[in-house]
Amino acid sequence: MKKVITYGTYDLLHQGHINLLQRAKALGDYLIVGVTNDNFDRERGKLNVVNNVLERVDAVKATGLADKIIIEDYFGQKIDDIQRYGADIFAIGSDWEGKFDYLNEYCQVVYLPRTEGISSTQLREKKQKRIRIGIAGCGLIARRFVPESRFVNGIEIAGVYDIDSTTGSTFAASHSIAKSYPSLDAMLHDTDAIYISTPHLSHYEYSRRALEAGKHVLCEIPLALEKAQAEELYALANSKGLTLMEAHKTAHCPAFNHLMAMIKSGAIGEVVDIEASLSRLLPDRSRREFDPTQAGGSMYESAVYPLLPIFKLLGTCYNTLHIYSRMENGVDIYTKGVMHYPKAICSFKIGLGVKTEGNLVISGTKGYAYVQAPWWKTDYFELRYEDLNQNKKYFYKWDGEGLRYEIHEWISCIINKRSSNARLSQDESIAMAGVMQQFTERRNFTEI
Ligand code: CTP
Image (cartoon, rainbow, N blue to C red):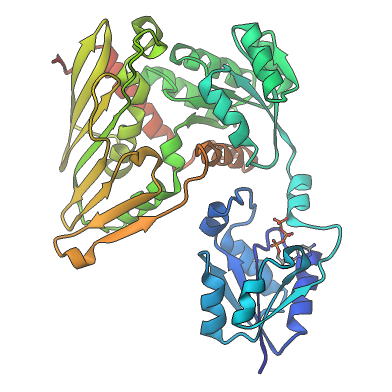
């Protein structure tokens, strides 16, 4: 029996796929079809796939052409599969001409004619209305946002707004963005969604104005410095069917998400202690980060990062939080928070003027997870146990600045009309604002 193996994403299954499968099947007696897993697609930069892997497998199954369907999970798997299934022919569309010649060592490689004029990419673009995005605030982070947004399909950066019109127009010109708007309202009028990357104190107001104007919002951290403000914003977004997301990069980090899923599935037993730390020494004290009138300081700048693993694993209902800070000229250059949960204890450390070992350690009854700095954008972590033979290291891909992951999730929420996402729930984001507020009000607070 001659076995043929072929691979693809098969998103929004179309005639081109069917023709390819027919041609592949005709090469032998038995056809194995490898369908890419969602994670694998994400890893190789294909962030915009509409159907999830189960839907795509069902679609391939429904063609009746595949004798066996397998999932492609990792780079290098094709060689393993060819050997495991004893495939005689590896077949793929001619758009891949030459790319799989290295498989000739294992079986015959055949490039089949591709069907002209149709592709999943085209179908996705037709299906989705282009989302017009406006950027409010043209600083450092916005500069990273623009190139990262190019990895996400179906969007267009339609314009920018900056309180300083020269900054806005220079930014627009240097990033080939069509328009720099004279006011936020003018930009809101012309766009479907806005990304807010202005200084902290404008986040709440800009988000509220955008939501009131019926626009989706991706707002840089921290979304709000008061719990009630965060609650109000999410309630507003929910009532209008809009997607409001706090731009929390770590929440969308593939390695971090897998770590959370493994721990929630019991990989280290019951979680009893979490220690999370993050520091960034900034020598220039004239920066906004040190200005008390602009919500400077470690807490407002960075606390949402260490709070994420704590809230994800232990929830937002802690018994107490005590905050210890070293203050300098009205801002905390270092803060340590100690949180007591009914059956766990956690601490987080953040610093702009004090350097800490920036790792994340999650201790459980069966073992612990160790993520070295920079754990907030990690591509690697370890699970460690009493029996060292059980220790395991996990490696992932973290592309570019990593903003593409959060942008992709935001757009996917907008397209699929999801107001909330599991990676950073509204409750978690609101609880983060609650911690900021406790600090502002100096409740359970000790200066050191
Ligand atoms: N294919 C084809 N003719 C097309 C489209 C795809 O023969 N018009 C083939 C590809 O060469 C590949 C298989 O179908 O062998 C699965 O391809 P996939 O990447 O899933 O499809 P595309 O439509 O090319 O997807 P995308 O636009 O996301 O790249």
